[in-house]
Image (tube, rainbow, N blue to C red; front, side, top):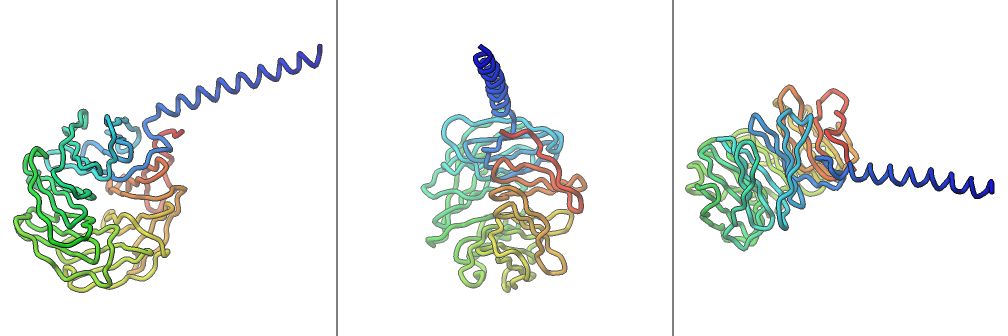
Length: 319
């Protein structure tokens, strides 16, 4: 009888634990940021921060990342880029040949089909509010009416265009596979082939601070630097021999984010390891000025990093 009572008591305790665990799992699944989230890009419009990722996940914050709201787009989608336009509105790039657009409050997202067979890989918005998308087959798409209609051109090479950045109303730079470098000085009306980055360089990320000064990160963690608009490139020392997927200018200092949660900082012309986070990768970073730098990546990584201080705690509980 005593044995039976003991077993019953043990079962009762186990049952309570099971119920408690199930409730915890259920609550975690309702959190705005989940460990299963794979964030690919973040952006800000001055009032709102937006992060996007795989499986159509969109999160937004109106308090610099202290708390987040979650949206999941309908159907099959994989968001790989997001940008805030000059009017505060949003455009998110879907690998499945769509651009999702939203008002400045990011309350409603609507899909715009991309008229291309190429795979889109990067998006930006110029000072006039035009969308620009680059991707495979050296394809460049542009839209002056928020994605309702698209103009398409390619540059005749079987290569992938990886990045596009507008520096001002007139000047923009595209980088791509096999060292491709394209520039415009007339707001995208025409594009010129620049001198190729040496050794068929494959740029994971590119960042220019003006028309002459820029960086590209490539395979095995190689980071090149130019001070003459891409005519010449110099390999900068340091790094960790691992791919860096994003380059960020935070308060005039350069950072690189990459695989295995690695973070590098450029100091005295050398890239030095400053952080290693428990994440499969870091994919995007955004400077918030004195508030710090928001970083995003795999395993639900969406955190505020303050250089010189201890890393901030996760923005939301994860499953």
